[in-house]
Length: 119
Image (cartoon, rainbow, N blue to C red; front, side):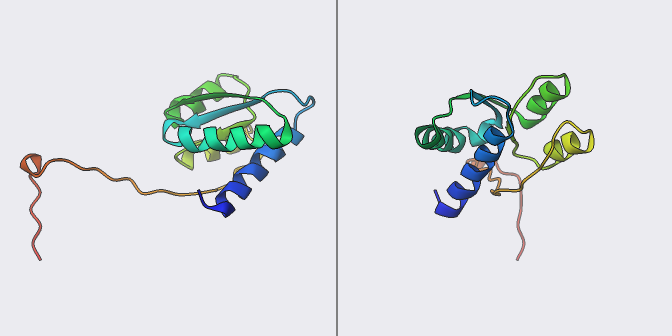
């Protein structure tokens, strides 16, 4: 993982921890596609800062809906900026930070492809 992304995400996690009244567990909801990287970052953060994490992953929209229904989280790592921005507009979030992007790829065997490309 790029060092700059690691530093930025660690900073985000630190801000979440500092914003809490207690120094206990940090609750993180994340998109399923971010599970591996958030797991690595939270482990690294926990080792250096001593905070424990409770993490749940799933589709970003469903995680947003859980927050809208009143579930409390400290960090919401969404795969779609629309979900955290909606929470911010609805005063259910205090800050939104764009920290990375990725490309969506789809691969299938050529025999199932009905797309013709003309050059």
